[in-house]
Amino acid sequence: MASKPRAPRKAIAPASRAGAPRAGKTTGKTTASPREARAGKAASDVETALAAFAHEVRTPLTGILAISDLLVTSNLPERERRWAETIKASAEHLAGLATLFVDAARLRDRGAATRADFFDLTALVRHAGDSLAGRAAAKGLKAGIATAGKLPAFVVGDPVRLRAALENLIDNAVKFTETGRVSLKVSAGRAVKGKVRVAFAVSDSGIGLTEAEVRRLFRPFTQASAAIAARFGGAGLGLSSVRRLARAMGGDVVATRRPGGTTFTMTVLLAPAPLPAAGAPLASGAAAPARPLRLLGVEDNPFGRVVLSAILTELGHAIEFVGRGDEAIARAAGGGFDAVLMDLVLPGTSGIEAIGAIRALPPPQGRVPIIGVSGRGGDERKARTAGADAFLVKPVSPRALASALAQATRRAAAAP
Image (cartoon, rainbow, N blue to C red):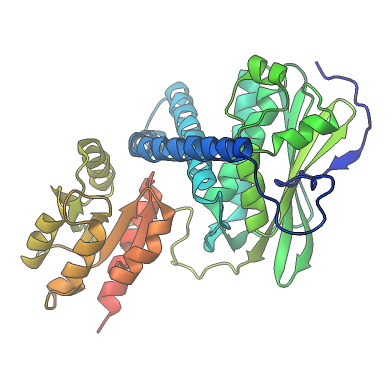
């Protein structure tokens, strides 16, 4: 049940990481005590371990997402379709959490490097609303979804991290609410240097929080209180990562204590984008190439091969697999492939090295379209610098793969 708030309608900004300066310290750089240094190293080690775990989790997640996506688009009875949609939504949530964990370790001591991708904002909001409604229904809660102001349909921003951050806020709202209601309100604010400020307000009728508890929530690996941690569990990492990502996208996260619960409002800046021309591929789904393709898949993980094979078979393509970078170079040199799907983490010759070696081959073999694939978004720059035409982040969805293949092969066909 919701506790009686002490100070209704008071907005609480996240506390700074450094905190207040020590008494008597007026100049110079504050030096951490040995205890503080040990605590900082322990937190860093935990974040690094979690990031490594999250990276490994992405391979099976790719399979769950891909197969569930294929199931929901097949001729299933209504009941089984709902089951498949639940599996897909749960896998998407896990993928979002994996993204947050990886970013928490990677961004601990440096700013976030967000992407600038074209995406359908209205679709993202709709999916988030479906996620909230589904989780609320499973717990016997009421759910409300509303939009205010005129949201741009298409925008440029980082949909993967935006969705991950929003899912975290939704997850917390449902998690800490035992009875009552959870809601999502999305609104568009004033333009800032050609960008629109979009606010996502997630409200609950949950346990209620004091000002001190809210401030603690924004510190890495910290829960509001020991009692809350023991009762509800969790790593306490999500909100600190959400705050970092929101700030990297030009916004922030604040908490507002109100009668009957708490509202967390995340703001981000997004650049409105025009409606794409007819026939242009969309981030939310693009048509596959007009003809079946013969593909070379460079993937050393047997499970990853099964997933890619299932997706590409449904798309009407044929794929041949090799598991090492040097094998990929030799097979590409023989020609006969319409495109190469190159995993970047391989034993021996890396995917980056293999891309460079293939690009050094004489034409036409050296001009074959190459799509880099990795569980680390930061690998995109390296892949494109080496010569990749496109890049996909694991877990790879059928739509994203179809779009990448269409764009890469279309670009290759248009090249002189």
